[in-house]
Length: 403
Image 1: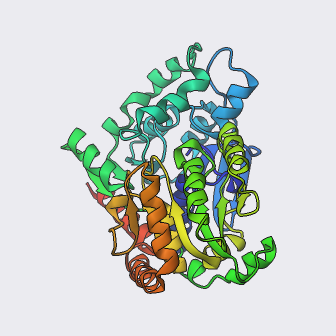
Image 2: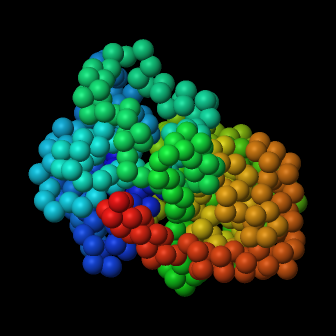
């Protein structure tokens, strides 16, 4: 994968770490190989999961320090020959599972071919279904720059990663359908993201309130998501401003690692412009292992997600496991597992008035909150607990090894 640093954790990192951890519990070695982005090269143990990090470069000529910083936070296709040779030297490999395409995925492909073993590629969104607007923003830092890394991409077969994979795994149902259409003769599987149900269900909400000074009478509206234009916190702040006029006891809490600093500044400016400094709190990231993260969910009255693009939405599962109702835009992979009025309230994209209406409905209707939360918790427990997801992954590995 591209990187694996708890302070910069996202959905992909969560999936890889948790599946690796569960496979190790089942007696299968599952080390993670990645670049040393935001970390030092070498071996680090995250719990019982070995993470092996290798030096990398961003292979464009003339990148400014600002552009490099943006690419480290989001987007870009790094080149890491040390990772390639480290993977090549690894013994006793049965399957290589790549969670990236492009150059790093090409390395996985090439090593698998040299060793004569199968390889699997996971598509976490962002390959066929990313909106053009998001693609433009991700490619802006290196637009117009000479990309000397293309020759390595060609040699590694970077463009052939999905074509040559022994199986393709999709986390989102919409991307699964698109991959099935494009690769009708390929083994394609839909394996959803997961959640540690027990950890979120047993969290102590009072711990979060005490840590951040929330009064017992203050009601928390929570959003956990990278601070990023894709996640649309700015639009959420606008919606909350309208909601807060009639609900003065509610507080919006935005938790998430900052992956686009310029957007983070815009969100803070929007909060200031709307006069919401006293009722909106921005917490730029809690490490995935921090007990205050599940505590934040448990402390909340509702969870809200206003993303413009969301391949799956693992944070929704975390809210379900914590037993709080969800309001979200019905985009990307979200409608694949969320059903409006059954386990969540779904809103049309960019429909801020409807978003406010749904928040209001949850705020005033305790019976609706309880009903949605109960059905969602039951679904999270029966379908999305990490051991269940890891077992699905293990069955795919076994199938391609047999074939």
